Image (tube, rainbow, N blue to C red; front, side):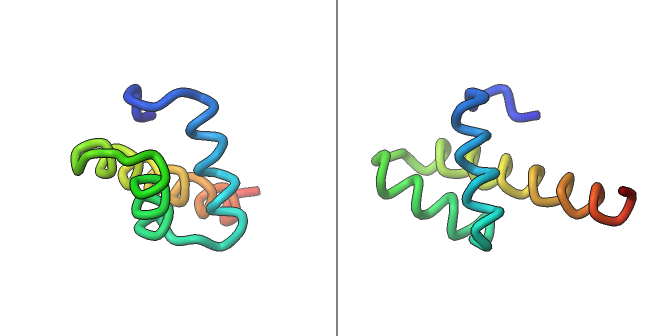
Length: 62
């Protein structure tokens, strides 16, 4: 998992994914709200993509 983000931040991302937001939308939203620079936004985007993939794999293999 992305070591640049805290567990709390990852939980927030999971929540946004559950609400139906895309990883790009999540990264852009958090980037605006938290006034992140581009590299930090990419950390969020990468984590959101990874969490989304994990969730999809768990759905395929219950």
